[in-house]
Amino acid sequence: MQGIKIVATGRALPQRIVTNEELSKRVDTTDEWIRTRTGIGQRYICENETCTSLAVRAAEKAMEKAGIGKDQVEAIVVATATSDLAFPSTACMVQKALGFPKELMAFDISAGCSGFLYGLGVARGLLLAGKKEYVLLIGSEQLSRITDFSDRSTCVLFGDGAGAAVISLTEQPYAYRAWADGEAGPLFCPGVGIDGARLHMEGNQVFKFAVKAIAQGVEAILKDTKMSIGEIDFVVCHQANQRIIEHVKKKYEGTKTVFYMNMENYANTSAASIPIALDEMGEKGLLKPGMKMICVGFGAGFTWGSALLTV
Ligand code: ACO
Image (spheres, rainbow, N blue to C red):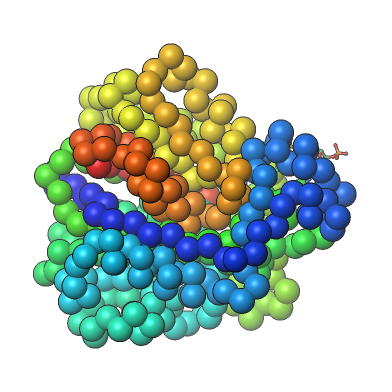
């Protein structure tokens, strides 16, 4: 099947870094607890930035690296659970801020931390149905707006940030799967018009779901492509928690496949975590032409999805 590839990426983080030590002065926790339970060491938190301004900066960098014209973009799609306004969408504000022409679609998608993975499916559909060559897909989150900084069981987990990717069609190997089960109880945030809405999470339930979702995501892609894990260079999961990924990784011990992790520096940035990771991997020179990676997203809904991408 005709697949998609990532042509270029960009990322944007707020200026302010909040360390575990700093959080331990606000709630009853320690750097050691946070690191051993989650692998997180610090997170970026917005002071002067917003979900939109982060999205704009990440998108600008991805467009610049791609070296394409704004008139070649079929759609701007922003995956976010924390848009500044209920409407208009963050995507429309990115369009305006960066001066994209009017002949394109601009909209947000809501799929929690699976937003970027769902966005890959949406981008492919738009490219197959549309007239232009590229989709600009952004994951942007200002989770600090919905984080209860008096709740130690959640406030240590999240961070703000944005990642963007310019997507095009490709003939290279590709596979895609997505799921949803409508299980809202363990992970939700009250919505529009509700003052002081804060994220609610039952950590243990989310943990169990996440481990199953990653394993299912990886295995489904291997089955669909008749590939073995040894042929996959990287698995890039939503960066929620090191222990979740370590748990899944055990099954693939002894293979060359690298489960990329960077939550130590960013914490969980929801829909932004995978494009931030991809941008960082590109910057470090880890991605060589022809390499194969499986990206796996999972989050509120519950929603989850996986994709095989070729560099
Ligand atoms: N510092 C110190 N102690 C804490 C903290 C903290 N920050 N948070 C909770 N604790 C305490 C609890 O109060 C509890 O104390 P008690 O036994 O006296 O009641 C104890 O630690 C153990 O609590 P658990 O919730 O059982 O701790 P657990 O080992 O399960 O770790 C965690 C909690 C890290 C939240 C884990 O459940 C987890 O990682 N879940 C997945 C969360 C996640 O990744 N969510 C996001 C995924 S989806 C998405 O990205 C939106």
